[in-house]
Figure 1 (cartoon, rainbow, N blue to C red):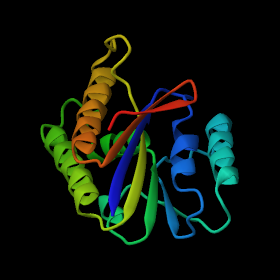
Figure 2 (figure 1 turned 45 degrees about the horizontal axis):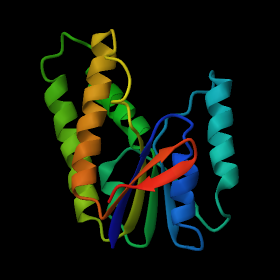
Figure 3 (figure 1 turned 180 degrees about the vertical axis):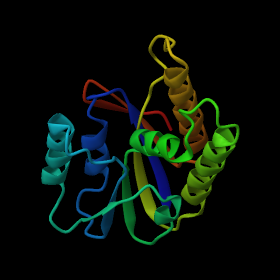
Figure 4 (figure 1 turned 90 degrees about the vertical axis):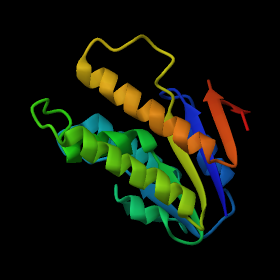
Length: 174
C-alpha cells in the first residue's frame, strides 16, 4: 500500500507521469472522475485521448464515490480536480441560498480524504495545482480554488510520495 499524489498545471504532463508510475501493473483500476458532456466535443476528445493511452489490461471505472478508493490492487485517480468539481455540483454549493451546501461539500471532501487514507491499494492520484495563478474574480472561482487547494494539502500530508510536474518534467517533492 502506498499513496502517491501527482500535482501540476493544466497540460503539464501530470496524467502521463501518473500513468508511467503504474506502468507494468496489470491490476490497475483507472478511476475516471470527470463527467461526460455529449454537447462538449472537445471534452469528449480529451476523454478519448486518455482512454487510448491506457494499457488494455486496465479497468476503467467512472465514479465520484469516495468509497471506490477502498479496494485492493492499484488505483489511478484522474483527477481530484474533476472530482472536486463534481462534488461541488452534487452538493449544490453554486446556489448561494442553500445554507447546508458548504457543510455537505465539507463532508464529501472529508470522505474523499478518509478513503484515501484507509485504502489498502497502491493509489496514484492526479490533481491540478490551482494556487499559482491570480485570485479568481468570482465567488465560484474562489470557492473552487480554495476547496481544491485544501484537499490537495490534505492528500499531500498523508501521501508517501508527492510529485510536481512542470512542462512535462516531474519533480519529486516527497
